[in-house]
Image 1 (cartoon, rainbow, N blue to C red):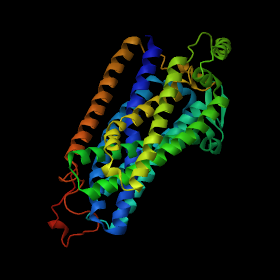
Image 2: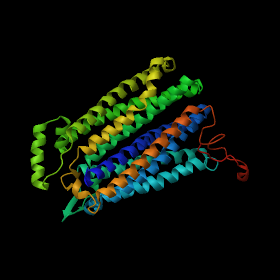
Image 3: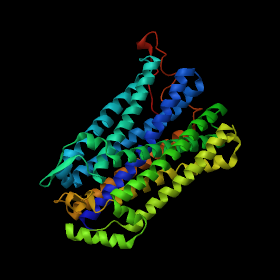
Image 4: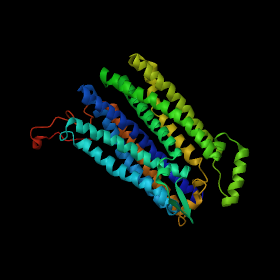
Length: 428
């Protein structure tokens, strides 16, 4: 495998591994915020315990995801200087905003939520959590606006080899980006919903949570899983229509049209010389995997919601057994979706403007990329294993033990003397 192949592989692994954590983070933070809102409105201690338990799982996953995100950003800057040189004036702007939102605003609001529970009024504390949610989703929006430009360049002019931004409005309203945003947000909600359903099913089978905690967690997870699946499927169909028009080679690979692929290959040979075509088999099976799992998620999510509404989910042995392995399928579908989206764009980094070979840092050698690939794969793999070990340990203990973000009660219980408050926030 040459330098280009190694760089592609390194990018694919770091992005996919990072996105596995991002999808769960986006899904869980919304469900935690909804649960906390219900506790603030009702004062029901069950919602408080739910917030503490699911909130801890979210915070752990978010913390590990930062490490994986740093690895992804580092390899992007190291391996793809050609992209930065040619398109940083367009592509770099939304990425810079995403970085500010993700690593400053979101982290700051999250710290305020974790450590401000005795220092902020209850409603202010709730507002801070919703600001965490808004920051998390805005971070995803900006990242996908940047990614949307790579797939469907708009709002630019070409000045020699450099792309310059001419219309920020066109960049921000890119149809390719916004259909992907809706699709990915739906997939994240689906992922969080099935994670909550699976963990709750495990807690029920092990008898490690009371009935009301289980019933309400099942209800929250079922709504997220069902409606997330509906949104993902609907916008996925619209996204495929956009792909058909704007990226015909990806669609040709999906339907395995060798005739269309041959015509496209001849056109590329005239434009760039000899280039690699997207691997049709990988693109096709990635799309089919995503679609099949999406259909399964829609069926199981709907089944779960019906069982919850009829108050029969706690008695449904088949469904609760099924929900535990179902936790894994959304992660497989998310990975397959990214493979379909990114691999199907080849041989371009910026569609029809900059080839992947031109985007590669020219000074990199095979030896350097081999070393960096081994380092980055080891780092992200260790982080992924660490994340799942921690999540599994917390989930197995359940809410009955003190596994919440805080010992004692949550926001609004201001002590008479802050110096006497020894009940500090803990994460384990």
